[in-house]
Image (cartoon, rainbow, N blue to C red; front, side, top):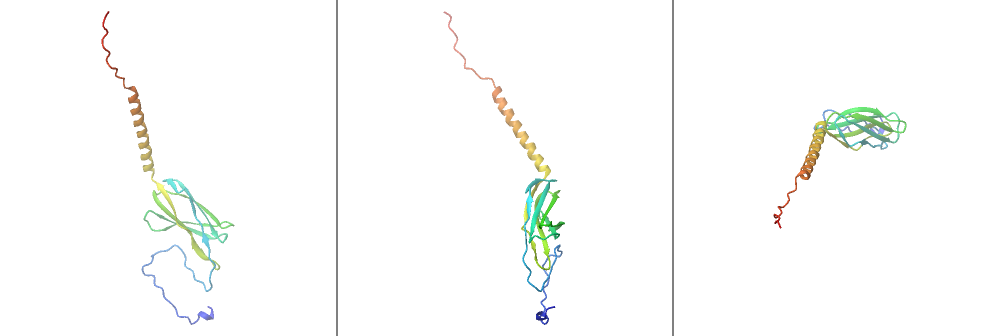
Length: 172
């Protein structure tokens, strides 16, 4: 412990009205840590239930073999850990996620930091997942509308034309 903080008064910070569980880590340091940032890109942002979304990003500074935690929140559920992955030599990471639940998925990535750099979270990204039932219903509706239009056009063309009666011819 540094001498300058030996006799410093302790401050207790209560955890009332806070989350009951957390998946991140808490750290403390006697020195000011350098800042870090993280990007997160999701592709595609709209897909059908059961599809795969690719999550990619970069930790800056570019640190190799750092553990990145990916969190998801589906609709109104609480945040949960999706998985943890490791950064590449240049600080990049990528993850493929097969989404089974329909709705709006919120995704963020997090790094807890180290002895030199403070931890960071990416901005929250959103993916809209359409249910398979909804997509099938939409396709069937579109097909029925097209059939209805074709039947209507064909029935208009098949109607016999009504000719006006001609006056009788007078024999000469």
